[in-house]
Length: 152
Image (cartoon, rainbow, N blue to C red):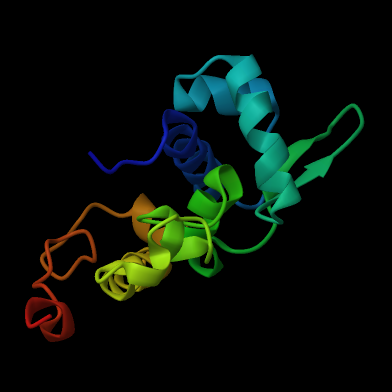
């Protein structure tokens, strides 16, 4: 089964809580309460999100966190990569030379194409989109398989 980790899922929930109140700084405790998570979990999430430039942290008595840029400028691929590293459907989708049968493999190029489609799909959905309920034209609706993959 292909899925993002719980921490990536939780990171998206925390980021949507920040995006719902973009003009103010939120404490980790407030974000934990809004997201239904434990404070240590939220603190663990905020570190890689800040390192990736998705959230900005502020110290002091009125410190906390807010989005580093508008929610419409943050794509889901950025969130996934902040939490998990580069997206790779297979090891060879990301790192050449990581597989013993790479030189004789007949499917590597197709896995790379599939990987690119998934990355593009995640790039096409923003954090702002995640705040909206899915509509009939929403990116969250199932899409047809691109012709380039359907005929491969």
